[in-house]
Length: 322
Image 1 (spheres, rainbow, N blue to C red):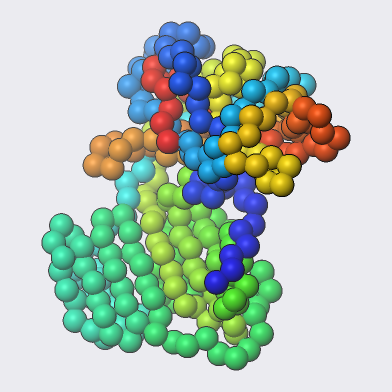
Image 2 (image 1 turned 180 degrees about the vertical axis):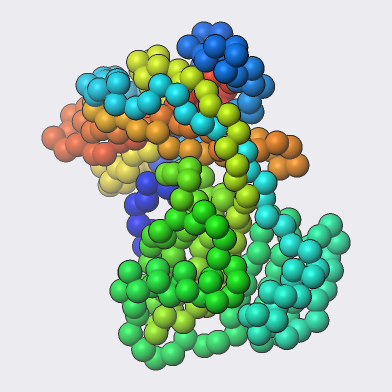
């Protein structure tokens, strides 16, 4: 099965060639950055570190000179954080879902609020996750176009009583060539954009708009508090000192595994995205992250490549973890 992943702004779980934070990176304490007055927030030092990917599959070492040529005032100085609680399913919920989806098998409890149903299709639930696999065979028909596939997926969620509130527009997150499939992804409408794969939903659409699989890892989201962000220029010092997370696609024929990548990275845009923080079973949040984008000119090359650097927008007193 050949998979062709689309490049998404939602990069979590799909990063390749990402720089790991330098092992010698200094810890930036909360008092080193601009914070909101105490009357606005007392929570910043207690916020858990954000979850950012540290995967670097080709084992690159990045030794880049980074330059900022963008507008440091193009993003707000304050941003909300959001508390989220993963959606879980009781046995009664599973029974209702199985009836709605036509999975007529017996519900089996695996303990700890984990259930399976096997029949015409299958359902698996555990706290924070629901997976559905259809028993229907994909018909010998044409694949829908992207917008139609998104519409099929959304309509299936609605009819199945699985469409949550606060769901975004939906995008094609992956294409499978053989057998032909489109993977439709949904994330919350607010906050947006989201770097992490949770909260999120994926629906596998086959020929004729047939729904073949679905995976729901959704959450109830509430706005928790507003925080003063560290300044953009302050955040970019972490990029310059090689303490940021990098996302860059390089051709492996020119830059084989284990290469040391040198050159100049020129960033001219910055935006805010959100990602998860906090361990399962403890308070969890969606926190803002600065997303610096620009071009990488590798040393000795006439080509340039898109590059993105990610820096936590709120200083928590701890380094981010992946």
